[in-house]
Length: 417
Image (cartoon, rainbow, N blue to C red; front, side, top):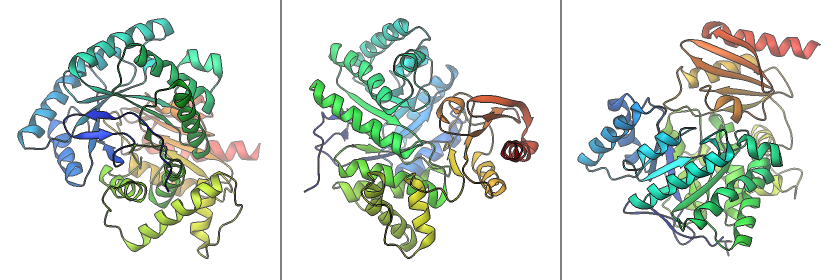
């Protein structure tokens, strides 16, 4: 019998129900610029047709609230009822402005204000507005982008991630607002799994369990991104933890959906996707062996395909046979060709060993969310890049056409010291 973590049910829009009594909900995120209304509408239509049950759209500026409203109006006029999720970073003002517009809002309340008490007060105002409009929210915290208050108090650990989320969860309960989904994503599969386990335990001890949105953030692309996502997500789903899934790939967002649909079908009553034979083999192996490897129940796996075995061991942090890559999927904040650049970085750095390299789309999320990286390539916009060593920017305003070469030079120089 499959394990189930009993959760409340959250309604998003008219027909999407997220919780333990319902099939796992599959979602993705647009990578278009929200100000490009035509492109975003077209992508939303494509994603809805491909089976995305929720579609997230970034809202980086107040001017984009009107763009978001126009996007929603056009979709509804064409009969597309898929609920939209506004993705907000740092601005409580924008978060409150989108509440009348979309069915769900993703926020990190700790980033509402540098002063923690002011952030709490703004979050309280936000909850009252969401109550008024009957909206759903996702409290989304990521490893490496926790609020300063939390990091100073608890550190930057899986336990700290869960404790940080619980503060906002408790505020929701105190406000009698229960249309809440919670996420604690990380690019490190071990950190991600432990953070969700901690949060599930803490909510159970608290007496109210909200649905969980699970995913590996900045998983990368290709086989590696799919395997990394599946080993961690399936480990949690095996334990009944997880009610909605986003697989974050540095590829067109429609490519994420078959992977998420495979997981949703394997662990709930969701319909099965159509997959190629090779992709199904990879996803099945990741789900079959992910939990035993991550839980250190086994040290090796009986696969004759050495490439697939190496990929699985690396995804579970049991062996590193190549550089470990962190790459965000891109969104409306990305100001360069992220997918092409990531592939160039992978090709140029393939010969290095025992390094973690991040390729991040924007300066908003990049520096915080590449917490595990030894080196980072972060887009500034306007054709410029900042290169990082650990969390420190070491080369700023590098022209894009020089940045990959300068990154390789930085890593090589460090390795010969």
